[in-house]
Image 1 (cartoon, rainbow, N blue to C red):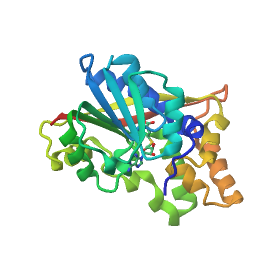
Image 2: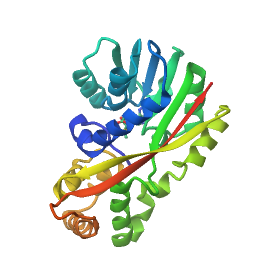
Image 3: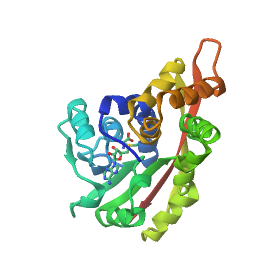
Length: 255
Ligand SMILES: C[S@@+](CC[C@H](N)C(=O)[O-])C[C@H]1O[C@@H](n2cnc3c(N)ncnc32)[C@H](O)[C@@H]1O
């Protein structure tokens, strides 16, 4: 169960945090100027726009299977070096690139090894990041821990359980199975500071992404029960802000 269509709502749920990760991720890749880049599952353009603003690329192609997200990226990323296509990771052409990247997408692909094999065949450097769902992605972990406590029958919806390969070892294993040697992994931590409980909670009501799509399946009183326990559990500062952190695991290799 996932849902990706409204760029604005996605930005408030995860896009704003992916943008912080993208900055560190692109700096870590430390690629020379004037390269060609492919951003697979570009969404609203978080990673593409960071590549454009920090890596001086010759060109960046962003592809995503969501027409709504591609539309949002086209409207908000105004740069003649960028182009966007509605295309799934399973429908990539044989066009080759110096650097192929993908942020927060690999775990949603049904055949991850096959997808990485394809990226290896078209990219010289291939690099991805995924949330550390099981631990360091706190805004989601708080949510799923509450769901697991209130609704044990739904525990299997928890992204931490569904995506156990979202770890350094997991990514290394997938890359190795796809034929890469010398895979490098690292964690990237970013602050996710919410001005208030509403700032934390409202994006969950928008239906964009896995946890919000799950929440939509609950009736009003069940949603309110999750909300109220979360409000009690989240570490809230005197001014009402909630200071969490989010971690991704990133992996890179050359083909
Ligand atoms: C969590 S979002 C990440 C978006 C963006 N890369 C970012 O970091 O903000 C996951 C994205 O993967 C896309 N996606 C899911 N399955 C896909 C597939 N098979 N091919 C291409 N994109 C896919 C979704 O449409 C969505 O934009």
